[in-house]
Figure (cartoon, helix red, strand yellow):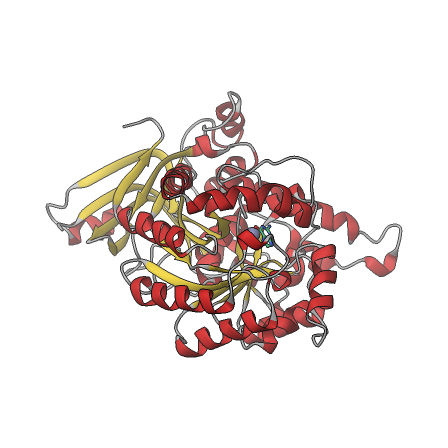
Length: 467
Ligand code: GUN
Ligand code: ZN
């Protein structure tokens, strides 16, 4: 396919802003008048338009004005078959699963329902600016195949796999370790590394897995060392108590997954709200990742994830951000940033030393604050690094897949445009400072109406205004 250019204002990240406390701009790249050159869905050139354009005479160029262009958002942890059940009333994790989630997910064994739900899922992701996700399906291999096929049809990057669950769920929802092994083996052969698909061995959670099922996960990992591992960890106190009762030999939640050789690079545990300092240290050393899911952690009342702890430079834990939709009641990573910001502020009340000086921790409190630099790094390059796909997505580096989102700082409630005009008098950003102010306005006041366009591998696949 011939090369094409996209000209506009670009923001992306070259490093982790938490490594640049006090000078986060050093981790950021900003071209007020930039040009992105894409060929066969891949970024082949990027920089200031006046430098890049002369290198590509005759290049057809799409001009995008009065917008901010960022790498497509990455959702590190989401559930395809919960698309219709988000916003369910009244329960915390375990009764919520029993009452709302398992019955809804069962419906995806009907092929027509599976296809309809999966299409609605991807349509809503794209309308939210999310171009890559690491997703749960169910224990049903046919439905998992539908998800891979639909992602393939849209040429979207996805990490997913058939779910392993054989305990603590209704009999009609579980599958034996042997059935799981056969399904996973077949799906890995068919989809892993094919197009933009990546496969994850996906034990739902240790509470739903017998030792034999986790042993099967280990066997799959040994047989396919290149695949990913995706699960839940330390989300809710009742769940944790259940895990320790079920897997008596392990001292803590992480220890269960360690026992079966699952914790290492390309491992993600969703939530991790209650991980101890020692578990975080072990994850850091193993190169394993956690996903911060603030919408879900608040919605299900699971707890306050300590961002300032996982970003401790002495013990940095790779961290993606995720909606966990439908445990989270939103599809949009902008809502994730909004709630993550509020969680940071609440955690800082807990770290305030006014009442109890022993709780004061100024360094952690500083890291809890979700600046726009940290925020948009976290849902682009940061999540890509945590998922070990930063060589493919998450930035505008040369060679990356050209997934990007076009943001409109006036998109949101009726007063959003007026609010944003507080920073730049209604004009576009001229400096990175101004761009950061508009990005903060988008994450705190805007919503998915701020997503004007979403592009996947160099093709526009969503336009808010229907253009
Ligand atoms: N733990 C096991 N299954 C689930 C799920 O579907 N959602 C969340 N949030 N936690 C889980
Ligand atoms: Zn989840």
